Length: 122
Image 1 (cartoon, rainbow, N blue to C red):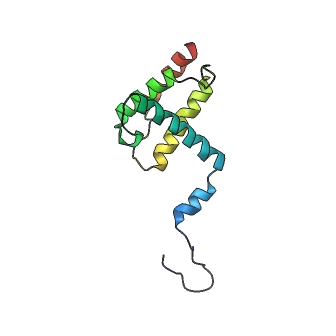
Image 2 (image 1 turned 90 degrees about the horizontal axis):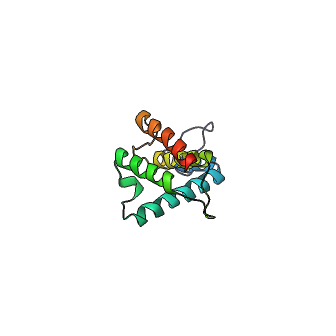
Image 3 (image 1 turned 30 degrees about the vertical axis):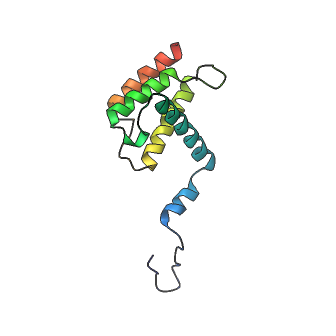
């Protein structure tokens, strides 16, 4: 890191990414990681690749399949708002991983909205 001259600016002392990470809500970060781990387990059981390796269309298909099939630990269905939370956490993870893949493209979002209805009626 380059040091700034003069007393008006202090050296950062650590990478900018660490400052950004410190500003994130720790509970949100933990929930996002928990949800991503759940999706990763689903993909592993299906002998699929890591989340970051998917092309957007294929990842969207897998997430839709996941949302239609996932159950809570007690065997009950997730509610629509919980499913939307899972979806949002997957997007948050993909954005933070700099994968250039985001699930919420217009076509994907339309498909997802239909999935919420299907999942709620299952």
